Image (cartoon, rainbow over all chains, first blue to last red; front, side):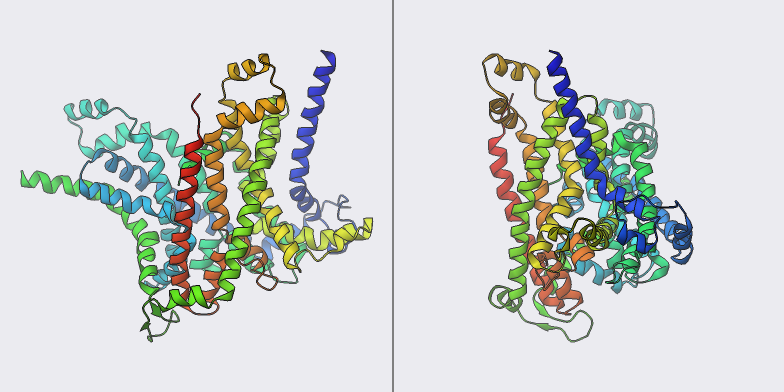
Length: 276
Length: 293
């Protein structure tokens, strides 16, 4: 019995060890971000001699981080507000309306989940430039929000279908109009699924590079953090002394968000998987 | 009666149209445009746009070496990625779902790379494979660290597989753990009493019982690998010598670097049909294998 117990704790330590090895690339980036380039190449595995933040400050100032972070925050907040406002409305209305128009609208909204984004991204870029939104913040916000609507509607739609109709009927008898009914009865009940949607969309918006690259491209004023890192540091001869602090700073908000929302993230992202 | 109908439609419109407009603009209209442009010869910018019928499609199937090379890469990648990530994730999930103490920390650690952006991930791996490996080579003297990891097609392929597995595995592990926890313990106890060893318990009871998780993960990993694009665009740029160009990346370069817009949209249409067929077949196969407890 004693032997068995020890056995289990050995595997449990092994599991923990393996997961730390999994994080090793991130740890190495972190410790190397404090070193001058020579030290990175000569003592890749060693801890930095001094934990100086000089390079962080330089990167922050020289690469315009305040604006990049402001942009990325604006994009994430705008997209999430748009999703949380529009997606539950449409999902609710479509789940409760049974006619042909409603069915057509539902198919049109869900269809993008079936076809890969990569198959229409070039035409999307064309469409955005046709309406003169290329390189603008507005263009990026509209597109990135629009791309997140289908999954959000799909998830909320499934949730609404499980809400009993009686609630709405009794509210109707009490004289509530359609908007009052939605905002004060339905919306509060959707909180769990809306949290999931918010978590998925916040992460994917903060981490987006492809859509920003397609819509904004090299237009510095409207770049998000990821796109700027890509444009500035993915050249052949990378400036690692500034790239590594840049990478670390771009990850920090994500990691804080992960620690704070861990339960919702793991559950939520897995729930989002059911899309076909 | 009629005013009531109009009022109802008005309410419907207020609820539905804003979101519908967003989706139409971001996805549906581009998708239709795509099919329209696929029968034209066009560079994407000029006024000069000639109708060529199915010529673009004929060209893809008869005379497009790089496209078929990218198909080959994508299929090869799909096979490696799907097998490796699912086998590894199931194995890790089996261990993690048994351990109570260290498991939640370990799960979080495996999950962290999944929530980090592709840009950060690819720059990070570029750094490790470049300055990092050259430093390790100086320390250890092992040839392994001196190989040109992003300079040769074969090695770059391995790097892409390893990197994407590293980034995504946390998500698959979580999916499998959810499935494993849901397996009724009576079943496992009964098999133990009947004298099944650990291997038999896993293959005869565990795997059939977690078939729903397996089918979700297979489908996700399969579509992920067919659509692989951002890693390629940000990390290898299809190189060296087009050896890691995926289908989606080939479409992208055809449109924006070669300026063959019509041909690129035709490829997109082929790509959609292909992805839809594969996922339909795959769903059908795994759905048939699920068992009820």
